[in-house]
Image 1 (tube, rainbow, N blue to C red):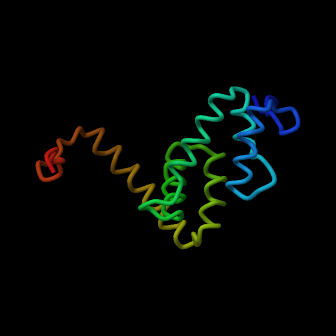
Image 2 (cartoon, one colour):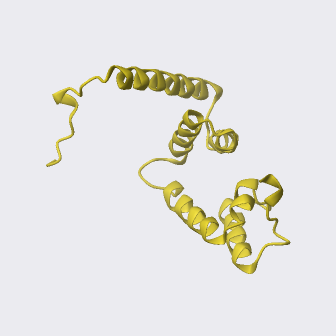
Amino acid sequence: MASGLIGYEEASPEVRAVYDDIMAIRRVDKINNFWKALAMHPPTLKRTWESLKEVMAPGALDPLVKEMIYLAVSTTNGCGYCIASHSVAARKAGMTDEMLGELLAVVGMANETNRLATGLQVPIDEAFRVDRDR
């Protein structure tokens, strides 16, 4: 599938518009392979970029926290590309080696205890149930 990467030069005007927005927002002069792969289906490229921009925009969570969450989920899902990409982004946002070590320890522990609770079919304590009326 990697041979299907669509570079800027061969991109349609619709795809170039998304590429231009990516480069402007991220202040870069190159499009990553992830976006080049998605460009094979322009509606998916556009939808994914628009969603990512919205989710990763400034909000209640600071950019470092968002990147570290993205890195944690990517690690759990085993997405090498996303691990690499969001490790760089998290480092740019201020993640240290110590923070990465703690993050990976939490990811590993959460995966272990999640699987134990799932395998043992542990019933949820009443104190942990979400009150829908709050």
